[in-house]
Image 1 (cartoon, helix red, strand yellow):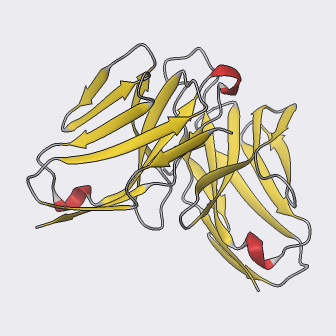
Image 2: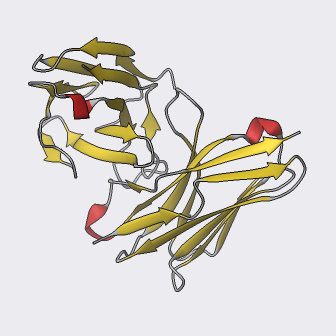
Length: 116
Length: 113
């Protein structure tokens, strides 16, 4: 979905390096999410933010941190990358609960991260 | 702990047949359930949402059922086409988890001409 963009789309890095993945959205949504996807494990929630001042850990937040710079921007950082963080990372957005489309999430195209 | 399981990792069917995908959950009381489609190398795309008080939802060739007694959702694609080949994900939310989705591992559907 072009309304949610992620950069970079692909990244190869080495163990111990700091990596930042960026997400921007033009949908005007308040809620943003970061997921990782591994084969056979589906999508797992890393962090989520319901508004600019609200940051919450998901089920697998260890080794990750996030920053919500603005309503439209949500970044994911790996402070010291390790090989088992090799995965496909997705950013998603949703509207505030109570609107007609509030229960739907819109995903970016993903970032394929490889940690050597 | 909460668990969501999509019964088949892969499903192969012939064009024109009905594809039926299953999503089961345990230790969960979802307020709603969603189905997404994911093509290789792309992000999931929302297809349908069904709430706990709804038994069935339809959209064109798609139909979703939701049985909170069986803790199961069925996702049907009628008159399937090769273009329907993709991974299909179910996702649940509810209780204290409003706004957050928990995803199943996905079913890879392949429709053969």
